Image 1 (spheres, rainbow, N blue to C red):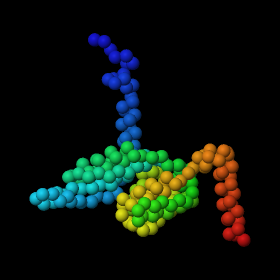
Image 2 (image 1 turned 120 degrees about the vertical axis):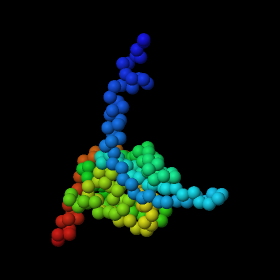
Image 3 (image 1 turned 90 degrees about the vertical axis):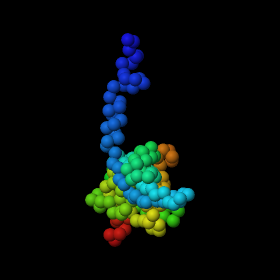
Image 4 (image 1 turned 120 degrees about the horizontal axis):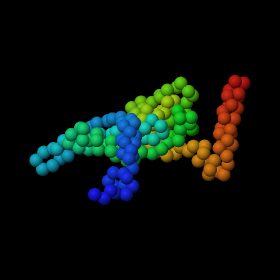
Length: 199
């Protein structure tokens, strides 16, 4: 029997690729944010189902969220988790623990404000925002939700804030400068503000 060229399994995939993909899947942090019973009015009465919101992250700067509806809770969670894995985005983090700068985001009636924090501050946030930060791998952040407390609005407002955030590398590339110029100026401004506060 003729062997397939490449020495891999069917489809030309190399040995070990599937294992690596499975390992990445198992390292993801999945958090169920909310589960809600919903009803659809049909001829003859109501048909009940469940709507789930799930946040998925790798704890290293990638996070996504998804929603799913089904007649049973496990199926709704599975659909939401699959959608969250497909919609993951990378967020730039400062020193791998906090945000690069203060930022706010809006979605509908929801508004969130997120501020960078010193080491040891921890995650000061509640509800859906805490689930996002833990999945993302943020260790120090101060966040406040203003307006709608609907988990859908809060999550979408948080991701809108993430889209408004930029890393020093991206700003330096846009301005045609070095990263040291951008970061040095930020640290210098902070030192000047601290000196002014002491006087």
